Image 1 (cartoon, rainbow, N blue to C red):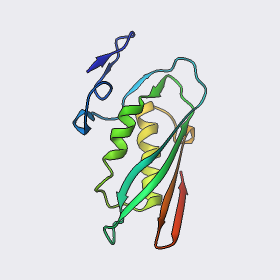
Image 2: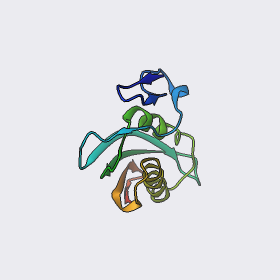
Image 3: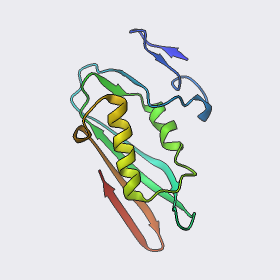
Image 4: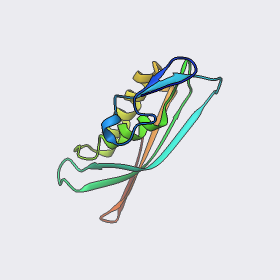
Length: 127
């Protein structure tokens, strides 16, 4: 575990491996108005076929008191690796979880999932 200059303790930051995941962690907002995070490492599985779905995810939010710690986000996204979920439902779940962790209204967080092509079809879902 790591502690910053404000006394905030981080489980994921500075720890190796997925075992460090202890939920979405946050730290005091240093004064930013908008944060955008992007990843191409999100994987879930189709709830019907069990085939892997690979995503580019863009998360943007307008922080109030807190910002999202990025390593905890990476580990959070990794929790979907074996989850059967449709793209559209996953976008909503990620938005709601981040809004809850940061104590923000859902309207202050946006999530866009761009599913990589499988079977010649791509899907983009925004929440």
